[in-house]
Picture 1 (cartoon, rainbow, N blue to C red):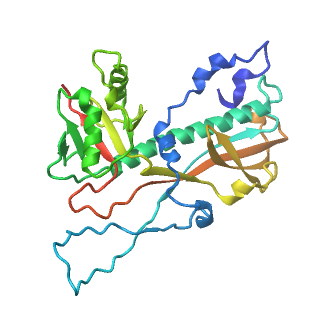
Picture 2 (cartoon, rainbow, N blue to C red):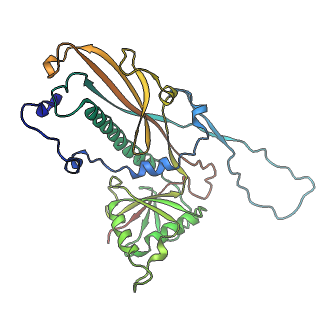
Picture 3 (tube, helix red, strand yellow):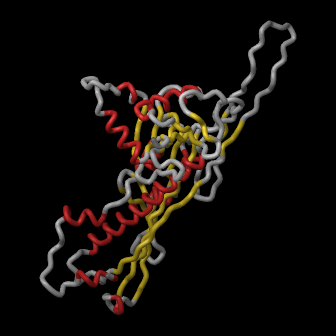
Length: 340
């Protein structure tokens, strides 16, 4: 009910045990956003470059120059002056807001501090759930649309932009992922985001260790597998995965320096800036107070209303690929298991 009417001190009351109240405060997992955030070294020392939220940021790098090697030496050889390239990160803001009054909870079983802490946590949950959706949408939009003509191990569907693993090859699915990444010259570790169907397949196969008659343990070295309950592709209902070389796709988070350093007073009309930490993320917190009459909402005629907002800026990026002559045009690849 609105304004906590249901918990007014009208009868003998107690607070529900945290164990039983926790189910109500469940949130959608955000493993993809967490994984991308762990690769947050895309920009070196971002705070010194991005001094405010509307300042554009440009990143420069030296692209790959592909040539066919010569077959002889020459006394008058001439070369080509290479060029540099740049990436311009795009930043998005996710925010949520709430309000609380100074006197509204004077006759309530919950304290002001308990309610405020709960409100801030729920605001952070709402933002992280949206960030997870944003992270998956970024990877889907960034996936490769080009592949070598003679790819081995799966067929690339240029209409859906996905590698299709043939029917009957579920036990070799992850081996094919590793092989195709190598065929695109991506050696080493790979980050793999799987939908629930492939997570179930992965867990079942991972249980077939060296002591079993069917040993599938060779599949997993080199892969960091994360399940996303939100990842889905309507074209591939039997299982889908997004794969990229470890650390080559990232989410970089940022908040204004006034929040990082702290400024003002939340109890003041002009308000204050600070931070709120939740699940390892640092959010920008802004709050201010104003005189108000909350008597019609279970408060009092002479009251103070406090407004709070949490926010978080994020830029999603992947390693750039300028050289796409006969290889993939993105580090992000979609793999799908065809239905049997």
